[in-house]
Length: 280
Image (cartoon, rainbow, N blue to C red; front, side):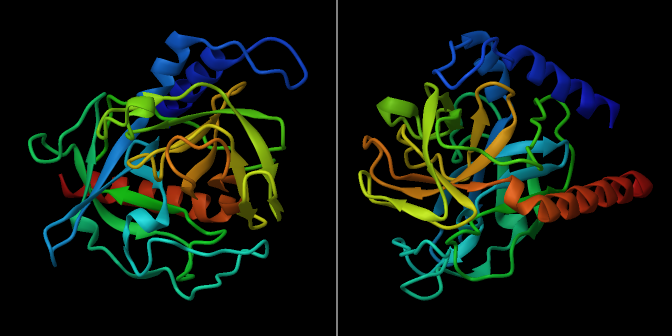
């Protein structure tokens, strides 16, 4: 617990940017690289066809990863249609959960799931009960072991985000080069709009628990975090959006909107850690 708090304070201190208002913050490359180490790769192996879904996630406790629901459940559609109430226009989006033991966690700057050894596996998933990802594309993975040499990033569980705030997206989509499997922190990106509502300029439709970011996020970035550029807190999880190189219409699920789920997941992770210690 003490180690987690020290890590969180270090990240907050290193990312704190002086100034006021909502002008784009000056980037701190060394601080961004440090925070990015808390972003891990989440690989879900599908037994039916042998395929692997590569996503991103955030280590928020030594044995707990925050990611997107669509990364860890069987998909029914690749193109969810959502409205500003957070409801679906094309039915259910996800079916059963993937077998937690088929979900692997990788660390490092570049990963290759065919070669690299996983650092941990999930042993359970924690997520909203709905089968649609509109307004609810968030999940936690309780791991079968702790990862003690990776940064733990703090979640913002109270207070949301506003249009004009700046965030730093991080994920394994490879950034502008599209080198999937390479972890890249993007440039600071403005939050264009916060749900509920729609942005007619970009085409984004947002539920009450979602926000839209300007800078593109790419395949492999799903489930990755948006880090508040001033505090380093995880404020959102990549859900869906336009193409990799489009401006706007990149939709995140707000973390603070699922604070109860987060607290429950943190408690389950703590209990799992104690159970693992008792079995040694």
